[in-house]
Image (cartoon, rainbow, N blue to C red; front, top):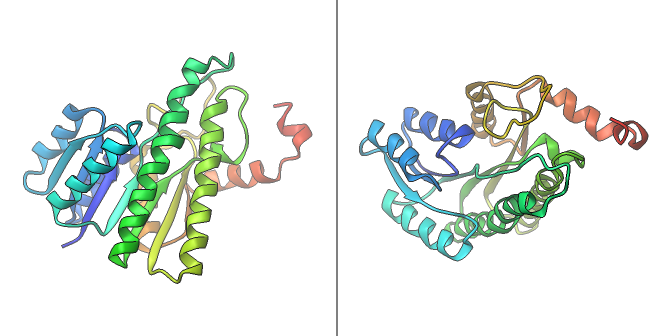
Length: 238
């Protein structure tokens, strides 16, 4: 039996991942802050889904909750970390930046370390994390969000380096979305906003192939390439 834990499954890509994994025959543990939304997934899939309300900005409690959830579903072969937040904040109001730092850096680090450590002790496993194309450059209107995603991109690379050096049979996949039609897509004049189902379908295909990195959807690979190569004098004036 294949068992997965999806962290941040109450909505958006995390919820879509959870539901598609259940449809594919997996037993799934789902976590998030909004328990009522998690219970909806449980009711639609009796006996196949276990849920646990969890707030990753409280790392000690979150890790303990994850241990209990894994025990309830009988183990973990795949962990998908989909929790994240961010706000537009051109005025640099720290009150709007703090949730992104606490969720995308502080709490994110605690749970990704937990998942990595679990798979090291188990000797096998697959860790998937959702970062963002936005992490490739800074943003004047969403500074903490882009910066926190850059942190995640580099942290995952560091974990993969440790895995290779220690010859561990653990797969790590970074899922790097562009704009997806979730609550995270904020602002005016957005373009190429992709359906959640399409982005998750392409990501699951990459997971099945145990790819290191997938940019979803495919057209966002063009944007990612441009962001990496656009000269500063052009990017900063945008």
